[in-house]
Length: 51
Image 1 (tube, rainbow, N blue to C red):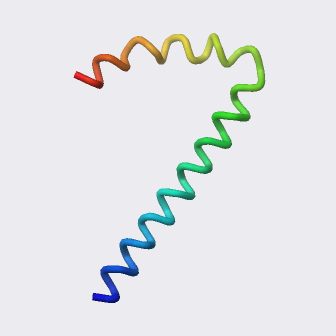
Image 2 (image 1 turned 120 degrees about the vertical axis):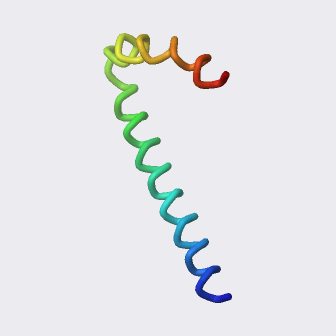
């Protein structure tokens, strides 16, 4: 029982760390004006993934 709880908390912490790293990278990448041009080609395939 304790082992499963430890594994679940480990996964939650790992996901939180990865999420924070991705957010920091996104914020750093958003500073230069090139972010708009870099983000444009990524937007169209989003609706396809939602289907």
